[in-house]
Structure formats: structure tokens, C-alpha cells
Image (cartoon, rainbow, N blue to C red):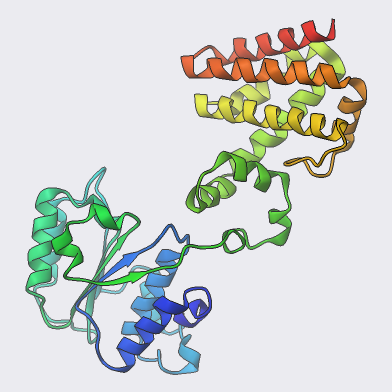
Length: 326
């Protein structure tokens, strides 16, 4: 339960434990997640900490009683979760909540509602929840969750106890040390701009498949020349969107950049341990040839934004690279 976050979220953990132990539980909490990937795990542990009768025993880590299991199964009547309906959280959702929570709790001491992505409350819903917060009913606890604190109305923020979660470190996002040393991880560092995007990138299996297929495509081209035109289907089938093809070109650019670095006896940045395939390509190409090929990749990548035919783009790439070989 909550105890597992004692080290990684020590400030938020201590605030919650102290307030519960002193019986100073707020009627409304606003969690600013800071893109912490386990934010909802933390919040659900907090919910169990409030509701579970065993939370002061067994090192505050019950999680196995029937109540905790019902919370996990979304089958606990005193807990309500609200998420955006499409782009917004609508007033009708809040009206239904208020109707359900018009009575006192039956099973436990508290009734709790959680509003995920609270920044997506539309104007009428925001006003509706504001009234609910201004006139809190005894035994009802609101938990608002957001990754964009400043998009919420100041009047809503001011009526909640704010709990800011600490942004996760890269090691916390990628727990597997082996993953931290992987080519995919180093590609992800280049492709993403924040920890949340990095986490999503690493969890998307398609990104690993595209990396593997792109490297195989390059090897096939370097070993067989224009015959590689016949083997592009697998890679193209993965490239459903322009962003996929842009990612493919980024991989190829990184690959040739690293080969150039290695040719110059410099440290590579993404492909730290050259594979047998990379070694063969490096031995096959002079430094100047690799530089020319890199320039072609950079120039052709710029055309992706113009919505060019992706099949033809790969064909043009192979033909342009072949001209360098000539």
C-alpha cells in the first residue's frame, strides 16, 4: 500500500500519514502528478489508507483484505471514479455524482470520489464541482488529479489541499537496468522531451519493432543494394502515420552519425556497442561515403512533413544512396 512510496514520494507520503494520524483529513485533495507514471497507484494506495481498517497494522501495507480487493476490482460502493467523457468532464457526470453521494456512507467512514484529468472539467462542470467543494458534506472526500495544475480554476485550487508528487527519475521509469543500457532507451532519450513521453515511448512495443526493422532494412540495403527495394513491406506495414516514418528516418540518421563517430575514433552516442552488422557496414563504406549518405537521409526526412507517399520515399532513399555508391 502507501508504505511502498515512503522513499520515492517521501514528502507526499509524510503529509498524508501525518494528517491521518492527527485526524486532520481534508475534505478535498488536489494531486499535482508532475508526470509521475505511478501517480494513480499512489492515489489508490492513499484511498486504501483512508478506507481500509487495517491500514495502521502490518506496516501499513494491507492490500489483501476483502475491502482492498474490492477497491482494486472497482467494486467498492463508497468509491466513485470520474474520467473525461471524450474531450471534457461534463456537468451531467458531476450531477450524477452529487445524486449518488447525497446520502451518508453505508460501508465505511468515508465516501470518496476521484476526478482524473481534472483540468478537463468544462465550464459548467467546474462550476458544479466548485459548489460541491464549497459546501462539503460530512464523510465525503474529493480527490482531484491533474498534470496541469495551472489549467484549473483558482477557486477550485484554493479549496483543496495540494499534494505535489515528485517527478520520477529515469531509473524509476525504467526499473530494468538492462533497459537503461539498451539502444531503444538511448533512442528514446533523443526522441522525447520529458519523462512522461519517455515512459510512454518505452512502453510502446511498436517503437522497439520499428527500431529492429529499420536496422534490418539498412543492413539489407548495404549488403544487397537495390535488391532491398523488394524487402520494404514489413517496415512499411509498421509505418501507419507520418510520425512513424519520421521516427524511422531519425533512427537511420542516428545510425550513420554513430558510424561516422566511430570511423573518426570518437565515442558513439546511441549505438554504443557496434553490432556485427554495423561493423560490416563500416568496413564497406569510406568515411566520406557515410557522410554523403547521412546528408541524403537528412534531406529526405524533411519531405515527410509534406505528406509524401511513404513507399516512394523509401524507394527514392535506396536509389539516392545507390548514386553515392556509384
